[in-house]
Length: 505
Image (cartoon, helix red, strand yellow):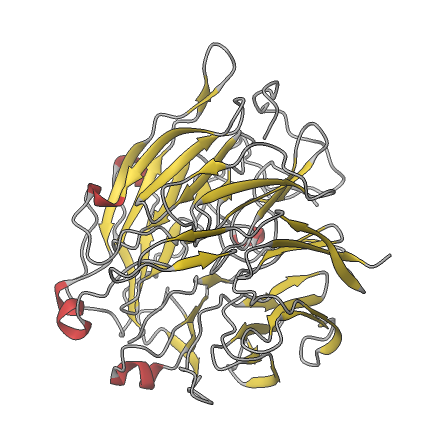
């Protein structure tokens, strides 16, 4: 598929000035302060000639036409949900009769990380836990993921063998790693220890080049890094569980020996909390959702239910004013998804018990450009069978329908225009893994509490999904989001292992 390349020609964009803060805004919004082998060569500026001509892209911009497409010059799935709008989930085909091709590693990946002062052993991979997959210059397709054993792992997609030594973090890794989309041999990941790191992949072993400590600012809540970073040209956007959003100029390059370098500069430090929000719901306010980018806006949400849009057209000057501010009324850990019209799809949990959450719903569509009420529709997701209501997963757009899994255990197909739930199926309680849409096929994790596994649906007609197969994995719940790449499905489970599901022989 044609990759999204930064054109050398700068296109002047004429855009509507109709940007405002919606009626659901939180008052007193805060203004931001200002392996590859060692022989891997630097990326060139020459673009590959293809038979398809895509529109040109201005620097620092994520145009509408990139929705649903891979991002960058790397052939692979380079971040959680694949691109800045969080709408690309991998490359087909999807296996039609899958079986476990390999399991990694030989013994379970587990680590101790205290919760509330009490020891807790975590195993496998969790939420969101999506791997990245890329086709290296040496011909190896490499899968990279962080796990609960406090390590980042590097695996050959064909064999399940290690491609290079693990990289040890200081604590468990809950979120998804990101690979540099522009061909620089760099990996980006955070941990509970509490640092966000940039890691070079062109040395003998993965090597830390830079880190950002969650304690570098006066945090509101926790010190983890669940949010998945997104890189748009040379600027990285990420949120922390300390409830701060960061924009970082990477200044990527190479030294005289050909090794990759970075010289990061923090451009923006933005607190996602406000005094009013603290008075409403308390201090439990973190950013666990990943940042989405559309045009020259970034969107993210926090666990107090605040959905924020910042204008980053002048981010290199240290400016990112608030242009959208909406209160969902409850915890939003899921990632905002942006469609090709710039509309936002936001999922919330039922946790804080505010009246606002009941009024808005747990799955909503928002228009961030209107000066009127931005909520276009909302879907209620009440608790059921002793399970809390709401949503932890990130939705998947499939044509006119958007699919989402819910904590009470339903897979919903929602009409994107009207908000009507036009289809649903039982996938079992605790469905935190996000549905994946590739080649008119929807892949979801099912049965987390009883009979774990994966399931696929034919959604050629997204209004009438047809179940294709169920592949059990009885040993452990799948909380992580799968990655689909050319006939394989890669995903980790809470049993301590990571799997490749492939076409049965």
